[in-house]
Length: 398
Image (cartoon, rainbow, N blue to C red; front, side):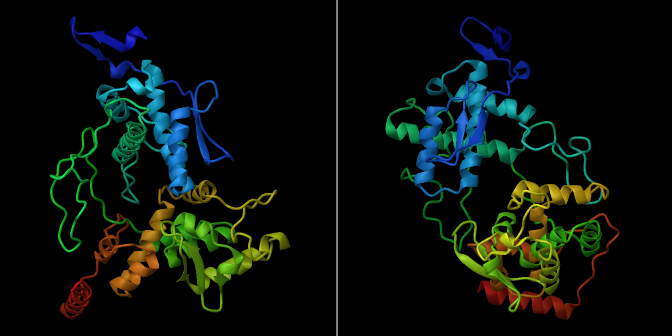
């Protein structure tokens, strides 16, 4: 362990982050107890401070997927502390800084890396492949979770006296940043919190019509065709569509009922007639047990029958694109649906179908679709069309 440090002088000890290697010890495991996921140490025992924090998250009605994301972020932090042999309640801002430096140069692989050289751009979709370091959004998420973790233990008196990951500077009265923000005004300018990374603002990326037709033609099974057709017509989030049950499918009105990710409210959203046709073709081969009213709509193709999960749906899309050389994601299908709707519906209707809580989240879909490297040329709208679009936009935002 002494190789991980360089002695600069008698008063300063600097950790050599470049030579630090984090062992793949500990893991996030599902649990059937009070919390859906646990963080286990190298001896397969629960990490008690993390368990206490996740129990609080569960009591605050956090989503299981959110708790899993929090657990993985804290696993990164504890793996770093185990490697440098620092107790969790003795960690300082130096450890938070060094973790940030390590993440900038390395990454934790949960999924298998996508094919292709790191950092290169896919010439078909225009997406940049992940580089050798951790994505800035993942670093910021990790630091935010660790900061909240220590803030929780500070409030209970079980942690250190200072939070090793400082949050954003509070306002003049000590309140959180933009606590009394007027939604009709822009957010006040403020410096990022310590160690937070710059994250570029990206426009929603959608599939051109030719790219979607090519992707749809590469699908082999009726289930996968129905899945893609529902994604690109209903604008549902990946997890929302996978949670649809048979009783929430209404072919007569051409709607499906989805449970919204944030509010947990049931909402019926429209879908294309083709999606219901592919769904009927898929359900012909399902056993009666999979067609019960309370049963999920989408199942695995191999026995024993199991509800289709997010990772399996993601794998379906990756396999279909292997021969095409593209790297579209399930969320790109949602962007595609919303971009298409924005051309026909007004902003309020698109917001309601998308399940957005604010018009600010829906506004980016009003922008023209980005040019993709497929030889497609943009059509120049006439002055009359531009005037109608501007008039409609100002009526909605007035």
